[in-house]
Length: 279
Ligand code: AMP
Ligand code: MN
Ligand code: MN
Ligand code: MN
Image 1 (cartoon, rainbow, N blue to C red):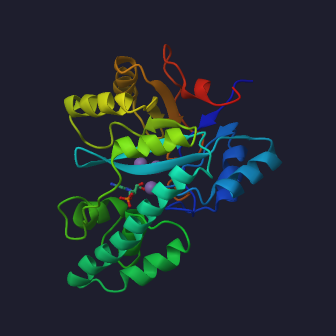
Image 2 (spheres, protein in one colour):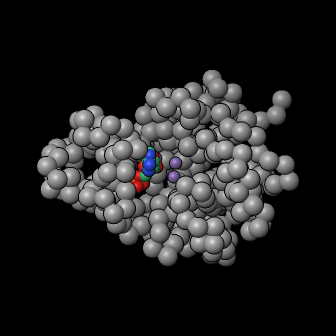
């Protein structure tokens, strides 16, 4: 039997709906055999995920999704097979955590100015000890009937240029890659087509990513179409990057984005898991 990989998903350690152990159980029940939980800017869910995976006999790979800046644009960099105790990584995560906490207050302040009260307390309560993301704010706006759905929340309030948007000084991409590499991990450019950047721009970002030590690019993601997979494949080939696969699962409420439910990796690419330690 060949392995089923899912190397990008979220838990309550950031903006996912399920606890780390429940993400692992769900992945296992859906046939995933190699899993990385990749919460936004935190490794808080890693030990719980690994312990559950070990009980179930599922191969677990430590993971994270870091927010990074390249030329003032926010990009998401996945770190795989990282040492979650490495001091350089943990120091970097403290910086990211402080930014997220401060930004949450600023977003709430901006919503308040638009007459939408109580966002900070509500998202803090839902996030608990997990990292607060814009998805928490989107859920809040939906719940209170301010917007119709998550996309509407981003379109009207949370995206760049909208009243609830706060520009954030995430760490530079080169620094984020350096943290991942010091922690013995592999840096992967997440969902290259989701930034709505031109191909020329993305090619420039990927060249800088590779020059800084980046090793992989996500080629297969949850809802990717045949055309999108072909374009991402071209990025991998052009920049000689290893190819990764990940659903970006957040919640059972969106059944079309499910753990392990991924189109096949196109032939001719070198999978990122060839770089994992012990493989
Ligand atoms: P943040 O890292 O705090 O800026 O939040 C980004 C998160 O918000 C992403 O990881 C997604 O979970 C979610 N997100 C961003 N844009 C959208 C969108 N258009 N629709 C649904 N979720 C989104
Ligand atoms: Mn998210
Ligand atoms: Mn992302
Ligand atoms: Mn993600």
